Amino acid sequence: MGHLSGKVALVTGGSRGIGRGIAVRLARDGALVAVHYGRNEEAAKKTVADITEAGGRAFVVGAELGVDGDVDTLVTGLEAGLGAYGEQAVDILVHNAGLNLMGRPIEVLTPEEFDRMVAVNVKAPFFLTQRLLPRLRDGGRIIAISSVSTRVASAHGIGYPLTKGALDVFSHTLAKYLGPRGITVNSVTVGFTDTDMTADVHADPANRERNISLTALGRIGQVPDIADAVAFLASDDARWITGTKIDVTGGVNL
Ligand code: NAP
Image (cartoon, rainbow, N blue to C red):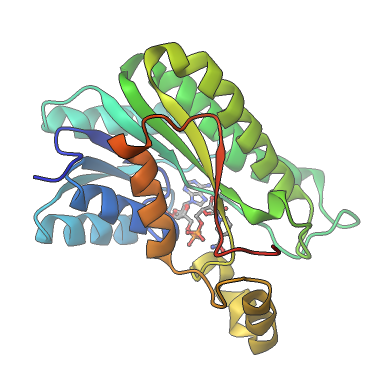
């Protein structure tokens, strides 16, 4: 029996990368986990299979974010999945799914690309939270996955950091609003981490070495480095932490 036994978590983008790591870790701690994916159903099913093989409980929820009806689709799938386990409420909501169109400085970023990043990184978490508020249990957790690019100017573009900054402000403001319900809201500032998102960047040894040299702890972050911090925020040990950003970057640009 883990310390999250009896809790229900939804991890957006739980199919791959950091979200997958968070889903696996929360399930290991005992939570029933809704593993959300956008397009890669196979990866989501693999995450669920790995969780169940390890004795955990999880189910998949598919919904592409950033398109019309995205939140409706996600909530319909969530309801169906929860129903199969006799559950209705959610205790832990992790806004992890994110889109980073790299190499798009201000001169070239198009309005369409800008809108897509805002839709996936800001609008979807906003309206998903709005829809889930009635079923989020008092004493619950909302955790947003943000980026070190909100404090270190990025070489890769300006649109993505802008969306993550908006997500931080969303979390901070929502924390005050949800305080009376005992729901904590925090964001996790992620640094250079090995996932599909950064595979191309880190495939270039010069980029990899540069990012390592910028990181005080002297390596590229790995998925469990982030998942463990999220698990802490989800736990009762973090009950008195709300409205803040936790820097989980290994000390980038100290
Ligand atoms: P990733 O490996 O590219 O995985 C992204 C996940 O988000 C996948 O599960 C994907 O689902 C889902 N997703 C993306 N766009 C979606 C959409 N439109 N609709 C539904 N689902 C969508 O990325 P990651 O590196 O794990 O990133 C996870 C979070 O960490 C993101 O918010 C990212 O901005 C943040 N972050 C990452 C780094 C890093 O160095 N990796 C640094 C700072 C912040 P499908 O596979 O089904 O499409």
